[in-house]
Structure formats: C-alpha cells, structure tokens
Length: 228
Ligand code: ADP
Image (tube, rainbow, N blue to C red):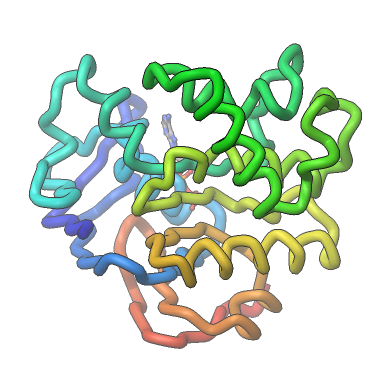
C-alpha cells in the first residue's frame, strides 16, 4: 500500500530529517513509529500525507508517487486518508457534528447522507450525545475522539496519527487506543507516531524505530525499546 524508496529530506535550514528511508507497508497493518525527539518521525509521517515533499526519493501510495503529484491533486489524495494530530486541530466555531460533516461536505454529499454518516461515526467513538457541543465544551479525550471521527468519516483505507495520545492522561490514552484498534480491525491501515512506551509494549504491533532520519529497527510485534 505504501512504499518509501530512498527518501531524503533536507529542510531549507540545512537539517537532514530523512536520510534514506526505505519501507514497505501493507494494507491493514498497524505500525508504531518510535524514536527520540528530532529523529525524523514527524517528517516521515508528513511525507505520507504530502504535508512535506522529499528532496529526493519516492513515496508510493497504491502505485502513485505522491511526492510527484501537483498541489492541486493533494486534496483528492487526502480524501482517501485520515490524519489525527496531538493537538486535535478541531475548528473552534463549529459544533462536533459540523467539524465532522465539514470533512464530508467537500465531496458534495446530500444532507441526509451527511447526517447518517456523521452520526454513525460519532456512535463509533461514543460521542453521539455530544453532537451539538462545541470543542471547548469537551474534555481533551473527547476532542480527540471527535478528531478521530473526522479522520474516518470518509472511510479511508489509511489513518495517520502523529502522537495522538501526547496530550492525554494515561486512562484517556487507553480509551483512544481502543478506538484505533477497532478501526484497524475493520481493515484500515494505521500509522502512529508515539512516545507512549506502555501502550506500545502492551498492544503489540509492528514497531518502526527512527533515529537520525533512518529506520534503525523494524520489528513485527516489537517493543518500544528506549529508556526515556
Ligand atoms: P520528530 O518528529 O522525531 O521529533 P521531526 O521530523 O519533527 O522529528 O524533525 C526532524 C529534524 O528536522 C529535527 O532536527 C527538526 O528540528 C527538523 N525540522 C522539522 N521540521 C522542520 C522544518 N519545517 N524546517 C526545518 N527543520 C525542520
């Protein structure tokens, strides 16, 4: 599904954040991306949803090199993937319902079909009863559930999450992980950067460790592996 071939990324300030990434990811996998701060995890992930372009190399998704597509095609690419951030990135002036519907409305759905899909997705994340609330009326964990709902409402085959539990307490983090597990069980590929050792060591999945812009470890059912 995803293949990176000799991917290099040098930012304009001269920092080399990707120093030859090579990786192959199959449909349906759940992958933790671990490594110290500044290792290149976010850069690795951002190149998968074309937030960043590599300086050289190929980022293939379903046979298309997304590093080569025109900017005007990026919104089409993003429709087929969900992205979840540490800081949720919900629109503060829209309700929970509207935040999720916003992701659908761009693809010209009818009002009834929007309502059905949004409510089904809210039900999956356990927040149907909060559809009319605004983000600042919700806890951090609830806001993250909304952002997960937004990421999956178009039923993408791929969900990319950059430290989705980074701002949450341990108990809430486990709740959020249950939702990602459920999404993965439905066949969706999950790629998640995380610093959460306990989660990585408990809910076992493939672990890709990044250091100095390179994959230094890639293990099925691996462990977190760092001391800090
Ligand atoms: P991680 O997610 O593992 O903390 P990042 O991918 O964010 O690592 O960063 C890798 C390196 O690239 C770091 O040295 C960081 O300072 C640098 N970097 C990240 N984004 C940018 C940017 N937009 N411009 C310049 N340097 C950047």
